[in-house]
Structure formats: C-alpha cells, structure tokens
Image (cartoon, rainbow, N blue to C red; front, side, top):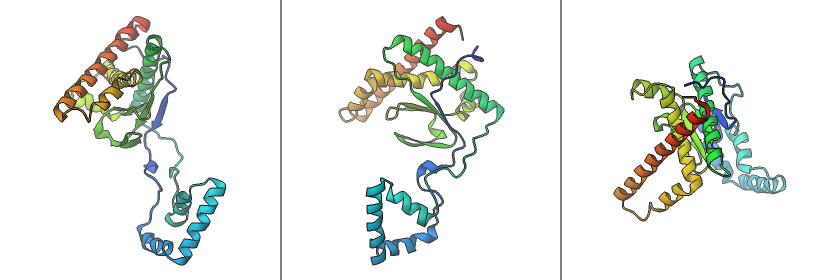
Length: 234
C-alpha cells in the first residue's frame, strides 16, 4: 500500500507502555490495610471522615483520592511521565495505523452526514475502556460506550505468524473493520442488536452477532473500494 507521506489522524491516543495507573490508586502497601481499617472505625477515624466530607463539599475534591494519597502512598497519576519509546518497527506500525484511520475518516465523512470520527487507542498488554478491561489476547475491538477502537500493535505480528495474513492491506482491513462497528453504532444497528440480547436464545443471538461482524466486514470493503477510487492507495 502507498500510505507513507499521507495524512495521519489526530484521533489517536497512544497508551503503549502504560503503567496500569488506570486501575486506580497506585503504590498500595498491604501492610497499611489493617491499621487503616482500625483507624477509620475508631472515634478519631470518624472525626477524620467528617472533616474530609466537609472538605470535599467545599473544594469539590474526591475524599477517597485524598485518603489514598495519605494512607496508600499513591495517586491517580502514572508513576512515570516519560513518553513510551517503541521499537522502530512498532513506531512505523503506529504511523501506519494513524494513516489508515485518517483514510477511513476521509471516506466516511463523504458518505455519512455528521459522521462522528472514532478514536484509535494504541495499547500494550492491557487496557481499560468504557466496556471494561481487556488484554492483548482479546484482539482489536470497538467499544460503543466511548466510541473508541482499541489495538495492541502486536496483533499485526500475530496475524503474520499465526494467521498467515501478512501485508499492509490485511492490517488496514482490521482497522477498517473496527471503524465499521463505529458506523454501525452511528446508524443504530449495534443498539438494535444489543436490545435483542434478552429477547433471543443464546444460539439465535449468536447468529445475529455473526451477521453484525459480517456487516462490519462489508463496511470495511466499502472503505477499501471508496479509498482506492479517491486516493489509489492500495
């Protein structure tokens, strides 16, 4: 594919190499748990809680976060502010992904009025989304709760080595497929399928889910066809 030098999407969140701070308060010391519980249920602890509630009401700060900073020795921020340094090959794949996402934006903005562009989240190992936590083993996925698609770039290597699906176009199709789910969300198709979950048997709902995936493949094909006509990138 002739993708180098083309526009890259700005709708990309690079969370590769994350320290896992999204799980909550970091630096937890289990040795402090017992004393903390005793303190909170003592008369002194009740006074501290009351003061914190007043403090929270006045300042708007989260008293739980404040307690975490005092007793657990952590905070809600990542332990390191250094940017992630990927390998040269991985960084090229990140640029490629941002370029393909930009191509899907160009295509779907010409097809759908008021198209809402999704965000691509690059992660390594695990990630937390509005749909819950997921690991690299989950594979690429789209979360309708936050309208983001999640991708661990190691999946491209798995495609080549384990699935015998190498090449730029195969990788681009993966991204376009997840963007297809975003189109389904905007068109209301995904919500209709989700409403059927409690109305159909597991077998019947699985059939509908397969159709949803096949339609996302079709929408990825729409992108490929329109993108080739627009830019001759293939």
